[in-house]
Length: 348
Ligand code: NAI
Image (tube, rainbow, N blue to C red):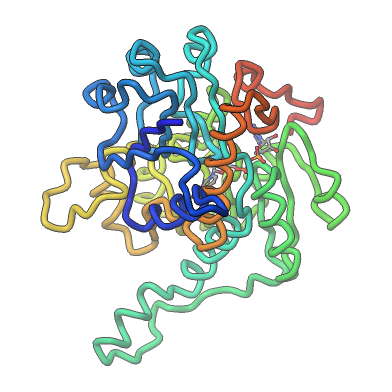
């Protein structure tokens, strides 16, 4: 099958080529690698391709899907777990099958989230620069023991559950909020609480829910105000779960202690590119980067060898399954995903 692979990066190709190989040395599918990001301006590049593969910064909105469909595309193969960049209803209406990689390495993202916590707490980013300038002073670098601190985990699915396990290993008191509590997390001693309690009692809050209409700006002015003064906030889920302007206000007032972000609301214009010689036009992002207690990585939570191997393999398998008419239901993104999860009576 001809697959137009958008937003390809040099580091991704070897993984896709390896996954696309067959024992006789012939590639399974015809992969057309495109540097371009999928948008209304670039749909023509996929004309005649039965499948299109995209990453998180690509635009699969309704007009883009209609143009792809007119060009013969019938499969959208996401190289990601998240699918908030796809108009699922329109894909359904057009009869375009959308397949994702529901789980690759949850450890990659979970370990990155915990890495952000440790780096912010012990100020590795500042210590690194200081020592290189032969400044061996410890002033301003004091952290806290993670042991016995309360960590609030919002979203205890595949990734959130691994975060809970790591933090329980540190001896943290882990509380959580999820409309679908996990028996695995309860068994490891995680306590499900209502969101107001999670905000009010957590020393660290970490986000692992998907971006849906219900979670857009879940962390807003009111929720930030209800957090414990000095709390640390970590987001490795999707940028728009946090209202960035409200976060900046809470950082300026000193109410929020520190922030670790792997994702940003408007990251589509910034991340996955080398902009080191350019002037950043996004003033909100530029302000965010000025805080000494904010640590930003450019959506690299997934970026481990193991995760990239699994993403490439599942993407190729999804294409093969589609071609052979035996799509895995667990990998299919459909309108059923659009129904907001019901909140249980405790308000989790
Ligand atoms: P998952 O689907 O296994 O788990 C998500 C959990 O969030 C589910 O248990 C769900 O019930 C819960 N949830 C839904 N609405 C909620 C709400 N309003 N409040 C609290 N919990 C809620 O997804 P997985 O694999 O754990 O991934 C989580 C998110 O992480 C993805 O949706 C994606 O946005 C992000 N992600 C980020 C990556 C990165 O590189 N930074 C890589 C992979 C995923």
